Image (tube, rainbow, N blue to C red; front, side, top):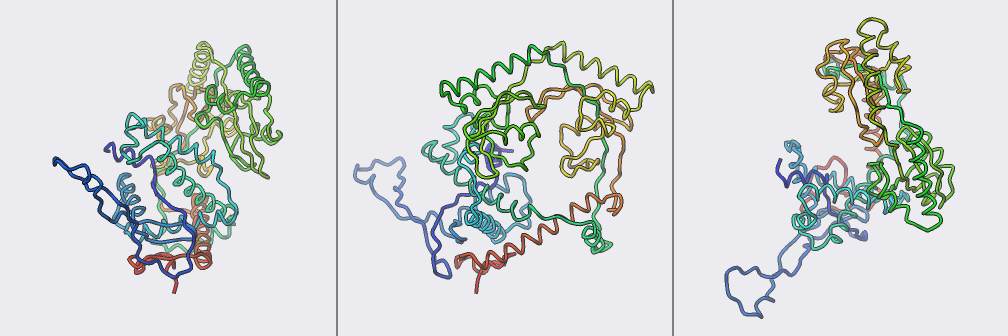
Length: 483
């Protein structure tokens, strides 16, 4: 993939948008956005006054307006370029279908604003910062990034990223709200499956069931206390000397998900954080900093920046005690011994997991891993996490891997583990009893899709929408052109 494509793929659907006030007319007049540009003259001597010569050229046109949002011709072109850069098949993608998708995004964002769905500046800016860091790493310097995107300054580029990301986040939050309470009953799942024609039954790919045993290296008490003392020192500096908690998080936090944004998270009771973290966060008052506390990731302190009903804006600092190499080696040796005892028949893998594994989530289920997408015990080969696939791809049935040291990508403490493929399932046509969880997923998606379609139809009718004369003959999936 070329450097240009690498950069484009970082900013998925890099869409420029402009806020406009909804007009009262029924269709968009043919409008051209124009700008005076200097005539480019090369290798010719010109008099000083001719440098100021200008000519009027068309830069962009308006394709549609949805609520308070405007869609430019260039938005469609940039989206087309981005999809190509990601290797997407363009066979069924047309100018009209892309315009329809961009109009949907604007409608979600417009209604999110009407429903007072909030996206904080910190969330948006943190996302923009990460994207800018990724782009800089891709090309080597921010100067090259600005040159590539034809931006005069970092501020200009940041502002455009802010607008793009805010629209995307508003759109996503609106869609989440629409489908958040949708569920399917077992009877609905059965009816959905029975309605599928026999020759259209889904086929599920080859799958594996995987079990693991985990040993977590022991951390000496003196190392734990050093970490706690450091967090107490940071807390005191913020409270007594008004030091910036955000700056402290950037300097000291070991949480890869929030370090670059000053430890910032926005969360509710439903946000998938560990229980200990949520219990502490929701027990604090606005402006308060917690005492150091422990989770599976290490030790934390939390600062509550703002409370908005059931939603918190917080910053936190994660620090992990130093683990001596001797503890790491001890965990490896213990796991190697457990592996040998299983192979000698002293224990089954499930018995060893129950008796010796340090992972509470799997040990009581014989070490059986659960798919994080649907909590099923099966992992479809083509959809497995690449790191997990690489660990088990060469294992034969009931063969046990060598102890492997794994660094948690989410910031957790390192751990040793052994894995075993306990079951394999060949590619097969869907069976209601054996594949119930997957069929339930399909039924839920179908119900969500129907709900989204109805929501779109209802809100298109109630929202100002106008399509340019150049696009009015498009065959949209939704009724964007009103009679």
